[in-house]
Length: 165
Image (cartoon, rainbow, N blue to C red; front, side):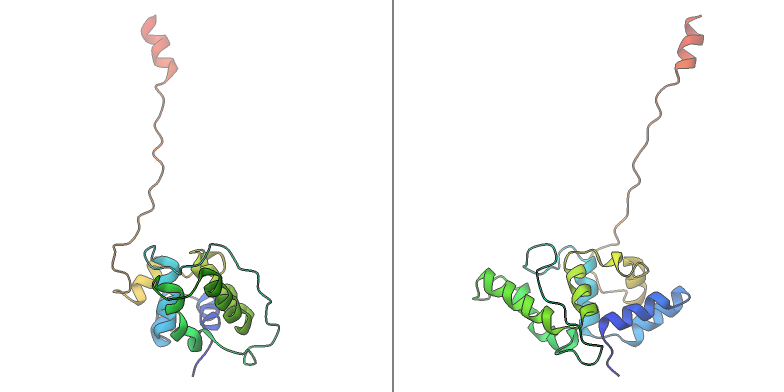
């Protein structure tokens, strides 16, 4: 059964524990799922498009009545990945907008967020750690470590006052 990528991610959001989330990712594993996750979490993997959400008309049809899906459009993603495609940037952007207008609103939002690396604003529980647990070899680089800012304490003024006395 093919479900929309956004439907799968919504199911993952509703899953009760981490293992259920990992199992859902593994159960519905396919190329477009890995593509969207790589697009979001891998800084070396991106689309050659400007940042931000492009101006497009949202499709107001219910799920199942959209013109196309990310699964079907996945085969065209090379247009926005490879710089040597003989298309102008304007043409690439217009093709991207045309594709977004055919996708269900939730998938279009997801693709725009993943393109900019901000998918966590929509799906908070889908993290890089969760993706690495479900697909151990999806990224060619080690996990990112978020460094805590180092707070240095200033020397206490009380000690100086006491030493002077």
